[in-house]
Amino acid sequence: VEVEVLQKPFICHRRTKWGDMMLVHYEGYLERDGSMFHSTHKHNNGQPMWFTLGIREAIKGWDKGLKDMCVGEKRKLTVPPALAYGKEGKGKIPPESTLIFNIDLLEIRNGPRSHESFQEMDLNDDWKLSKQEVKIYLKKEFERHGAVVNDTQHDALVEDIFDKEDEDSDGFISAREFTYKHDEL
Image (tube, rainbow, N blue to C red):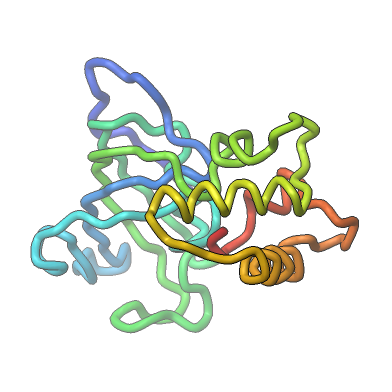
């Protein structure tokens, strides 16, 4: 991915990192003929779009090209087909297309998969989550949202989370297993 910074903000309080949610406006063009295939300004009712960095929510080129970005920064990404839609293409994007994106970052939030969330759940700071820690966290989340869930339901939910997330079946969810998964906790 070729990254060109088009505009730098005056002050940068924080830079984007894996797991962050980013609110962006963007325009996407085909390098081949410069035609626009998508724009949040023109499509999407003119609304910017939320995107989570580093979990392959969009194309790989975005995950690579949007790290360490500040609010107010504008970037131009030139993304080769291998980091975009490859041999298949997608919708208006033909196979083997190099894509150009102009991306404007409006806001950054901690994503559900951020290290901050992990640390909040990891009560004994051993860099892994036990079933008990996940259960305590879920209880707090449910209470915060005013939902009542009984212990049996909580246990079933915890088991389900561990089935999906505990890749090496060691009874713990490691920081790596937690941060690079799609399913919401």
